[in-house]
Image (spheres, rainbow, N blue to C red):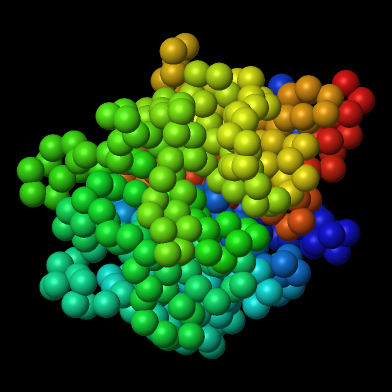
Length: 386
């Protein structure tokens, strides 16, 4: 980690920026290969484990959008270069970086592709969704964000084609797609358990009927909409909190704890919380009105972007929270007004990366859409001593 921080400090690609209120230092990718440069969606890291490569989203307005047409760029910290690969046009937030090799996977159409970060690497199609299930229809998505199984052999699939939702897994070795469940309600944001290759977390999210434009039906629990769902291979999807169904308008942006026994989520009124899969016990951990959050592997540090819409809809900040001390510290005390939700879904989406030593997020403090990196150690020092 010392080597990476040294490379980051010396890099000509990043500009140092300090929050004007808290003086927290971040590094902003100022070298540009695209007009819009974003960090990955908060469920996924764009880094390779050795810290050499950092992948990020690229957009070229007015081309592309948050569903199709964005592309990928990569920072090579060893060579101090940034490259853009236009052939990596991806759907939704599908890119996944293999942390061991630095290769990136993404979906386009019915296919999953990959390529390496080296300029001479070539794209390779590794798997395809069955054409007989698609029936000539173009998918709205193949996977919201590609999630690899704990045994590293397969990707979770939550395809939405027409009005049908297909949940299953697609092996990386080219073997056929394995269908776990087909529904006529939307389940997306599929995430394989980090410890169990036969378990997938799903979200009962909102969607639009492709023919009518009406609001599509969401999965129900006792005639109530519910956000948090789970499915085991060979079974059917069922709610995580069957006695406390809550729609995605009130609860959402879920992710797995590293232990595989807890699921974290945002309670949009009460803050960041988690639920124990065995006991069903729900615990509020960070009492604040967050939009997205993420935790480190031990679950004792959190980071989130906070948008208190009841105060001002365009007011955003990015904050760090030490669960042990209960202390909060802003990385960004106030972002300039963000663009509307479409077409590129410009939210900070902060997450822990590189063994929890770095927080990666999207920022616009320099007047553009940029990728930012904030070291964790100085944040923890300040929240421990507060």
